[in-house]
Image (cartoon, rainbow, N blue to C red; front, side, top):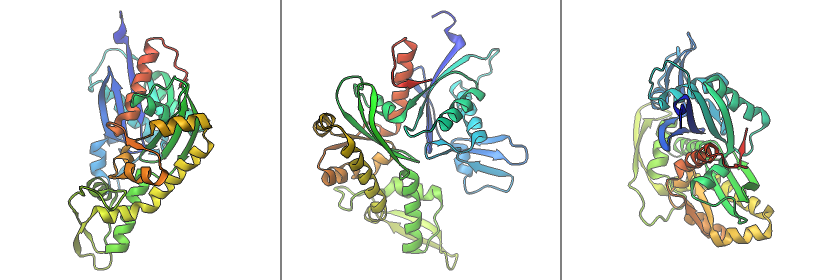
Length: 343
């Protein structure tokens, strides 16, 4: 199309833990949602993986900030810095003689208030966005894993992200029932930190707890092929001497049990309010797990046994919201009616 270079189209999954950006059907940014700010000059020192490497190692002049909390903007200035940086990264940091018209579709949690929606839009506008649309994350999830959201059929998606877990029933391009819970990846990380303190008297930082979760995170203790124990090295809280202990998936399954039980209760709560016809569809099709939390080993098996409904982990669950947001952007660009988008 003539002058198409004057418009830049981006699909953004602005997550609590990670931000993904699609452009031209490709992921051009996949970075942790964290910035490093110079407290003396208020200038951006680093963003994404570089800022995450600084986390816990800052000096008094450098602050590492996670702009997103529970899926919404907690620090407006930091979020603006991050979004502007992400847009530059999408362009490959190229200098341009003109400023393109940036069209953005951004995924947000279903429970976002009007104030929180406005904060996301304003941060994007201050970062160069001109035409901004929002889509709820559960709807983006359903699109991203290939569900036909416009048909009269019930689908259930459970998105276990960094800050929130959202359970939604979708039919006819709309969200019929949805409930959000602030028990997700960050809480799992905190559970592991608490477990290491209580069980081994070891102080563990956020990044190391995240590594433990990835290496040996599990939802059930009787995994068919359990991973090798993960060696944790940290300071003893009493002596400050270094301690090395191997941590197993069985231990992590035990320490995550209470938080996972809350997610089970969330799913039951949404199912209780689901209309019978849609409930029947969900039982036949099964429930889809997305988000980083879906990668906890054995989670689908645990939920299937507890709730007597089949659960399945979506393909590449970390990118489901971003893929769905990108699909919504493509439909919008083609002039299709997109009832699931908000301006």
